[in-house]
Length: 337
Image 1 (cartoon, rainbow, N blue to C red):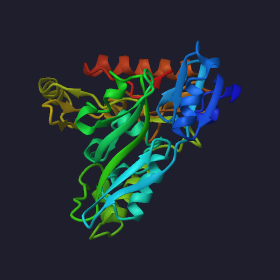
Image 2 (cartoon, rainbow, N blue to C red):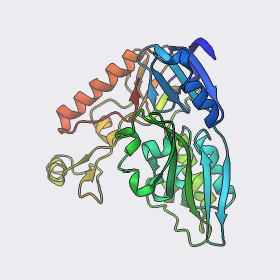
Image 3 (cartoon, one colour):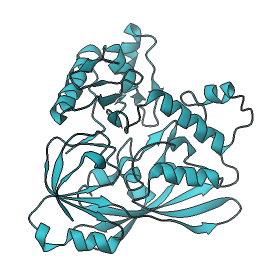
Image 4 (tube, rainbow, N blue to C red):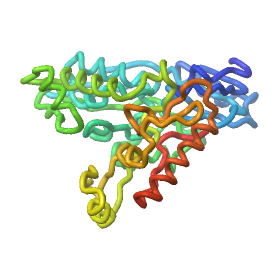
């Protein structure tokens, strides 16, 4: 246990904030012991993984529990597929690389996404045409109400675009222990028509791509567009890509015929938030110690010494500007704490 601990190194935005108490846990038993410690009974508690999707708006007045649960276990394997149980504190990208090296397909398009495995089902992480819900069988979690362990099957997780039951019904009521994934060894269909994947493969003269080629292409694309949090504080995509009604898009296309848009299974149409922000004049624009990144408008960055209020104010200024120009209101993907 550490008292009055800095959180600078525990979240990727690099905001100078502290917490009254901080504990790191490596097992479920350790977590239970810390969470139920009578010293913290009257204090707010926050469970933190990689800290890649949070913006601390002030010093945290309670206990921060850092999840360090580790382990990748093969539950079942045959010639076609493998089932993995993965602890929630594992680094997501480390898991992806492990699977790629073993020839297990399904999450290669999710390479280099920051954060831990526990955040993956919570956010229903996705990138380059793939979401984790496509390969996830179940989530094991500890109830913070009765301290019993439960397992939720995929269909019970209420997955949506960057949504799950853990952000609604079970918000602040569950500690994710592990997930089970089913990945393919044979017959896996590569997804390479989203973003610049195919273009990168052609540039590298990869004519017969495999899982590893897709992963390397995604890593290359992300590194070319997204700033490294170790060099420039950020939380990745700050806003969700809005999904709007078809008639709204039809109206906008008359004025902006080159506006990218992607029909969704729900019947709505996704419009890239980065494009909306860029068209509103914010890409690369700096305001004080923060700003929209020059290579990816969707990413708000800390140029050094930024205060949380600066980032928050910039975010809501961008939201208002985009709404006044396009009639579409952006929603933050980052959690304000």
